[in-house]
Length: 402
Length: 146
Ligand SMILES: [Cu+2]
Image (cartoon, rainbow over all chains, first blue to last red; front, top):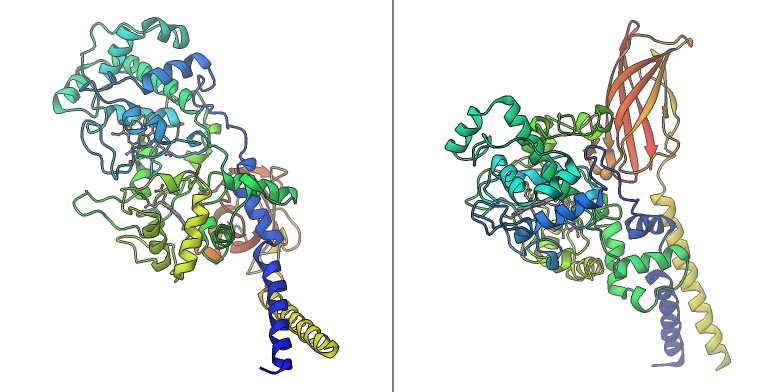
């Protein structure tokens, strides 16, 4: 090697070092704005729920917390909300499909930050947290009881507490032990024999139980993660250090997430969800009944007697914008699901609405290939990610977990 | 020795300058043609002049809000009794609006309240209005950047 070549090599090295220093750590203003939007610091205060006048009543929340973990609230006496929504597991159960009295067709959803969203369930078939809570209680594979059963249960076990919060309990003496519109044939028949007034009385108690449980769930807030501390430092223009630092690999993953990989188009805002519904071509699970996602969910929520416009809602129609202006009858609703929050996702496999993917590697592979949807049209386009980019994305998703 | 250092420095500077130029051309190429963000536009067939104004001071991502659409004829007369249909989406992402906004009230003087608008993500959105009234049917598309 002559002198020239050595100096040339040194020059290239020096400039390479200078260039890597400037492209690795810095963000464009646009990237900084997106990072700030994803950060917990931009989470608005808990929105009020005008459909539930007990939403912020501490006594209702305390009763709701008790009910959430009470296994007697089920037909077999061993299923509570907390059976599937485990308090020490981000309120989910690590299973591909939730298991109560039987096995359901969908993945149990985590509950952190749930009260910030307008739609509940993977397909958004309920429009309030209290109307949501009523659904598993009467689903045969979850709690398996009927609304008459729950009304009697409260009257027997929480009589005083109930009345202090919600007012007088109706006379339930002539209401059948088990009766409801969704139960067994015998339970449906028993419901049909009740007078409209009796049905109304039971519906009122039942909806109040939901409102108490919802008041409790409103307290389940998302937790600060390393990413949020990092975002805080970026916003403040300070050097992220120690428990706020991200590695080069994680930063590269963040750049992909908000850039070339387009993840933040749907996983946006501080809860990493746009609260809307998207078909992402997730495969069907063999053996499960047909699942059309939001296509069915939109119809169900419109017909739900406990929705925002129904008589058990405490709000007038002016508070029901989400329901009144929701998209219905649109082909893009077929197999569209709500993007889950990615907060805590890294530590709660399996993934997707029926637990289709066991690992984040499988998730990222899915986004890289963007296969055609089983029905409807996938919104994704193939990303053709390299092995390195996949690892970077996964590394970033992990910074959203503690 | 000394000339060696100079040589190295010169090459390094050249490399950096070349890189800078490369970045500059990338920027120039990725800069999109100027987007028309006007809140008042003539409809595509020239029948109306339509203007939109949000009813809230600050249009926030992910929050439902209303707009007021003002429809006038080309010579400035307010248009009554119009039927208005709203559509839109994000052309770059190939998706429509996350909600189905509707015209819910005629406010008089060619002004119509449009309720149920929501922008679920940041970026460029299109809002399209199909307007039908006595002079005929016409449409107009507005660009909005969030
Ligand atoms: Cu979009």
